Length: 387
Ligand code: GDP
Image 1: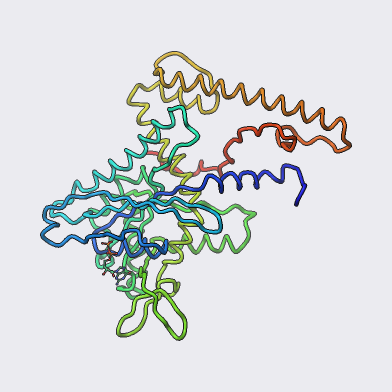
Image 2 (image 1 turned 180 degrees about the vertical axis):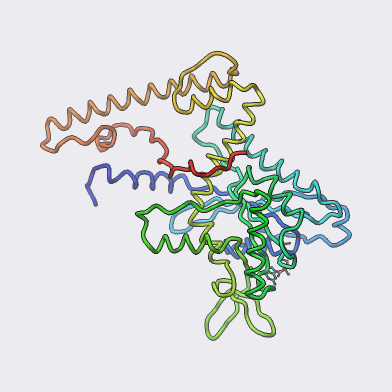
């Protein structure tokens, strides 16, 4: 409502701020060559992420080791900007000896965490570019009768570092019954080997029924059996994206043909949750491991520092001490600002008949805006993703 000032405006402030800042998301795709990773990513984001892609021939593959290729695109939809980075892993599972091929992937994920940790300890903490991997689509070969040793070994090696979303590739090569059987088998093997894949958060009781229904459908579809294509085909007067075969057309976006729409919905509607889990579970795990390397006490103390800023001497490094002091200073300044703002509000409301608004929320006086704390998270305590 124009002219309305009250704390019901808070979500708008958060919204405006987020839109202005834009969003960053990093998606990693892993799986054997030829399973349709590139096609799927291009289908999801309707963009050509790899215009200069060179597919290696058999001779190249003999020499090939796994490489990591990143492509970043800026996508804008109705004024909302998304900086999307797709990390491809060509060469995965291609060599004769594949046992170690995921080491570079782990190295890449850790390297992004390390960069973030370094940036966080720096002075310009507000403008950190977040390149941490928020989600990993793991492509499963539809021609196998379940997971391969490599699939299990890879997922087990990274499940405490990244949100794994298992995807059955080229679902059009399976009949409905085969697809269901493969899904069941994959799920059973994931459970049997104790692999923690990304699970969608539970819906709150007060969510509307459509949303609850959508979440239930998405959960039931895991592992998503997908078909990818960037080709547009005309079917009975309708233009659809699909794959044309002599016996008919497989429509990528038809829920009867593939889980493509479900996978895309999951990714887009739960982007924020994927980022939260990355921050609160995977990154925190990495951070604790790093701190543990420099002595057990440091972990407890730094964790304490997140809630309160008590500086305790002991085994804290100079950098951590500096960080804690800065946090203490910032907290003091925030308190001073709140006091000043409350006083200004009081003097303003004495002259007017309008009743005063609660504390900091009455930020209509032209006083400098208070640093907002991040929005409350939706209680992740139930996830046990710790390593
Ligand atoms: P990548 O090596 O994993 O990136 O695989 P590509 O995206 O390059 O695809 C390899 C081949 O599989 C290409 O000929 C694609 O046209 C084909 N392909 C991609 N997606 C699908 C799919 O969903 N079903 C079928 N049958 N073929 C696909």
